[in-house]
Amino acid sequence: MKTAGLFAGIGGLERGLAAAGHESVLLCDIWAPAKAVLADRFPGTRLADDVTTLEALPSETELLVAGFPCQDLSQAGMTAGIGGRRSGLVDHIFRLLDRRPVPWVVLENVSFMLSLDRGRAMDFLTGEFEARGYRWAYRVVNSLAFLPQRRERVLFVATTSDVDPASVVLVDEVDPPKSETRLDRHAHGFYWTEGVRGLGWAPEAIPTLKNGSTIGIPSPPAILLPDGTVVTPDIRDAERLQGFPVDWTLPATTVARASSRWSLVGNAVTAPVAEWLGGRLAAPGAFNVARDRVFAGGGRWPRAARFDGTRRLAVEIGAFPVWRARPALTEFLQYPGKPLSVRATRGFLARTERSSLRFVDGFQDRLRAHLRNMDAGAGSAIAAE
Image (cartoon, rainbow, N blue to C red; front, side):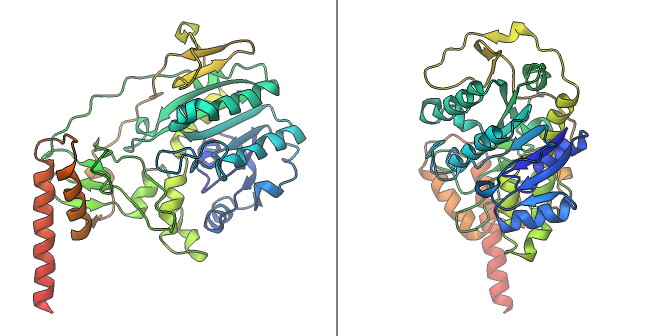
């Protein structure tokens, strides 16, 4: 299908869809670093600056895709909801659909919007699509199905065509393998910025890549390696953990600081997830109605649901459409990580020691050993000077 991408970021949806045979005819993003990446990586594709001033979608558009801003919907953000200044930009999707309807729409956003403000965001989105004659289906999909990053996102598919959207997004399911937690054998990702109420613990994977602070300070996760070293991954491995080639975001440095690359990667759609979805858009499967459940409503939305034109139905399906084989995390990483600093390690340990969280046996001991090694290294460097 001919695809228009709004809030395109660095083109995760579009890159994945292109791998499945779809073609971008329009990309739109307002942030200069993102536009620099899009211009370089999608040469020849029309690039628009601002969704608020975009008058109409290209006439050949068959599929509209949008990873609309999640800052107002995420737990890491201000949780202002769908009416927030950033996430409220979704209104322009419906303005453009009213100007020039297209048969297919795909939206992507954080899973937290299913429960935020008692599901108000989903009430709004589904109501707007239903009012325009669309059937819809959505599902939470975990990037861990494809790559060693645990990242849950809602994939929402709506259509006015004769194809059931459930046959696109509510098919394919596997049980992921059980994750082992052996500190001496496996690498473990966690967020060193947490430690009191959460940790983001992920065996043989990293927790969700984030977009960093509001002032552009990167916030990569930490990785505890089997030898006890604690590192933060290189930006090139972060790109790979989102399914992009190495240095995909490098063009951003022509217009912004290098740290902007972390925000770009953290905001991106995982490309292999989009490729799977694009494959199902091209070749829908067969939805099994035995998965249908009663749609309770009245607050938190289910992790998967559909609207068949008459009824809203919850759907029983997991977050793993596939499970792609991958090497151990230590083998997946291609570039040396940066050792977690003394200050960061000390602050993280202090938070864990006053929290009520339970940690894997030996985890804090390994962090203390890392801190001693870092302290010793700093002392040796001072002595050498």
